[in-house]
View 1 (cartoon, rainbow, N blue to C red):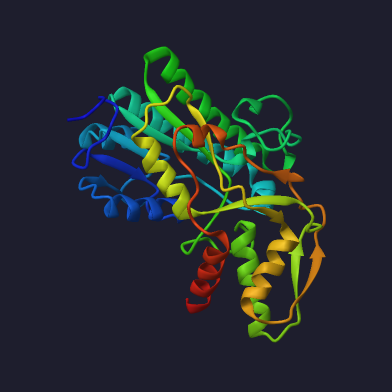
View 2: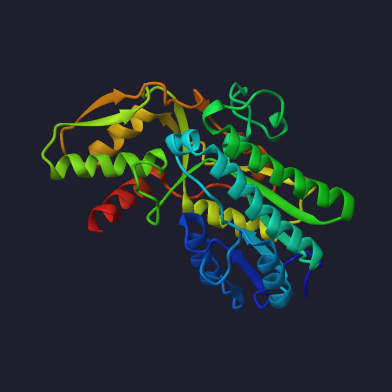
Length: 314
């Protein structure tokens, strides 16, 4: 017997948007492991999430009880800086289409994913949820951040005006096997892995790392985020915005050295494009998630090694 109408059982329909990406593929795997039998997915060819009428009709036809939004246009500091119009348009459109269709078709539960870049560039550390909109954003990724903030505010507004219980999870920097390793659009962990692997293949004794190497970043394995998504899908919360992080934090150059050590080779770091730093530090306060009973479980060092070795087998 279910405790609440908000809880999702193993036979309920769950629509997972973005099931092929880093986060979505991990969520799909975890849903299967946990015994969810009615997961709805669709390829980009069959369902263009930028098309409002197609998204609406898809949700209306399939009638999911819950939706998990992992679909988004994402990238590293360089892509965010150089393709701002693409990032703001595509993210606003995808999330608006899904959220509006979910509301109109009476979807009970929804998880929307944001990013730690929604917070002001000069936030106090660690960053609490209530720091949102208390100061200017980091200039290199403000377009992406504004799109995500709009999604949060839409969810919050639906919750307040219509009594929905849509939740927004804000993860820290995520990494894992199914990552994007394109150096022009990837995040820093996959970029470092690719650069180290390439240097070894070319017998080079150094790698180029963008920025000064001094900004501090918190990272978390993707399976932890997937675990948090499914956990909060089945959790009624008073708050609609909750940070998800691991507490594992180092500088960019320290991460590069960790991965070099994993490679077993002697490689030096040369810092280039020193204007591509992003914010100086991004560490999330996860006390709210902890209060609701969720904690990061994966060992970061073993997962970094696993991810590095996986890439080198590709």
